[in-house]
Length: 136
Image 1 (cartoon, rainbow, N blue to C red):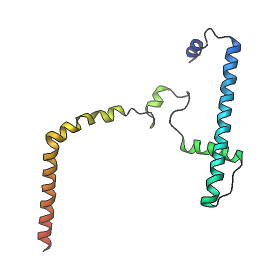
Image 2 (image 1 turned 135 degrees about the vertical axis):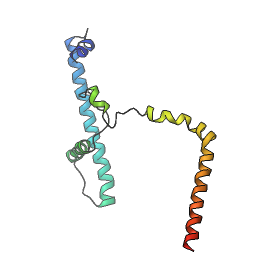
Image 3 (image 1 turned 90 degrees about the vertical axis):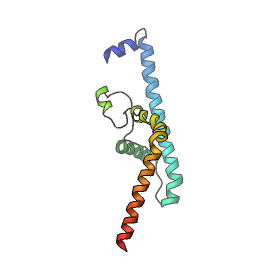
Image 4 (image 1 turned 30 degrees about the horizontal axis):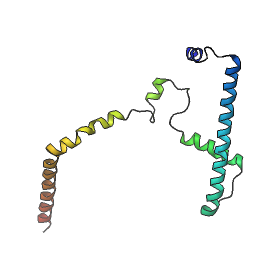
């Protein structure tokens, strides 16, 4: 990881690095304030009318946002995970392999699917007829 930072920060002055850190901190703080106000606005607009709940302050809405983020988690995020751990994550699996089999579905249905479906229907109807005959 230290090699990554050395590579990214190569040729940058200490002032530029401090500027990037300050900009990042301000950006994250701005997003937190924006999410707090959006949650507060939506809650205070909808919840008292629909469910009769009380209104929230800004800090209560930020607390709800943090609580939901902890409880519900999320896919992705920034760093902190090694590649081995992310492969076993539910959100990080590769779905391309799961759908690659479907390219043969139309060919199967044309060649065997109709016949297999007809055979299934015949089996089901013959079982129903024999059950009806036994019930009489």
